[in-house]
Length: 317
Ligand SMILES: [Zn+2]
Image 1: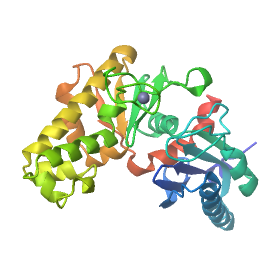
Image 2: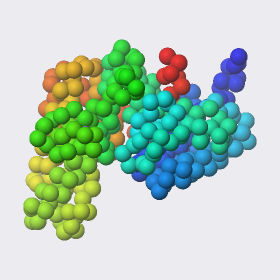
Image 3: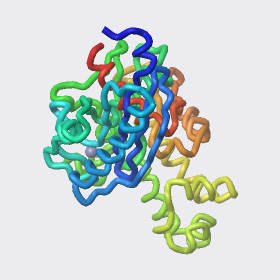
């Protein structure tokens, strides 16, 4: 049995695997993240990527050990589908192939590992430490390369059969739309992910070579990133304003549809899109149904690490 003294001195290591970066940190009982480190995701092989993670976690464990703090376990959030919470079957842009992620990290660190999908981890973070602390029903939307989601119903996270629920980026907005890697056509994320936003902006810049957006891209639309149209809009670019408004309407349409199905108290938005800040909710809210509340995650860059650290707590509830 733990006494309060031990509890006070015990922490969890959270690992947030992303398609671009990996974030690792030590999470204390008040969800504060310490020793946050970030490095690029090596996508040449899962083994190489997991090797980088193990080295970084080992350094943290050694440091904790030297300072007399005990690490209870390691929580890992990763893109991709896991049916057993130990193995990632596959993921969009990391070459997993039934990779035993939890076992590999456990063998290397001698610590218990709890693994879950990154979108679920985003939900756990909001539920316990973020915008969802005082609500019973919530949808967390991760808007980046694609659109991921976490669903909370009556304070329980909903995973569905074989952990496959929550794919809120893949309901059909236009059955005649572009093909999606999921096998359907015209999925929501084809219109409302950051990838879709950037693609639309590049097309519009190409079509309007006199625009400020084109100029900001240095005359090459391929240089346009998720933030470029916003920069151009703030400087008065009407083309960019149009692109953003059209995008926001698509996003609002999806949120309104999800609201009809789930009627959550709040939608919490996370992911790359939200780096732009409050302008997103300011432009979005007029297009939402009056009963819909959409907020930005208050956790910012630490949401992934905090969420991973909460996987065990979730399993026990
Ligand atoms: Zn799809």
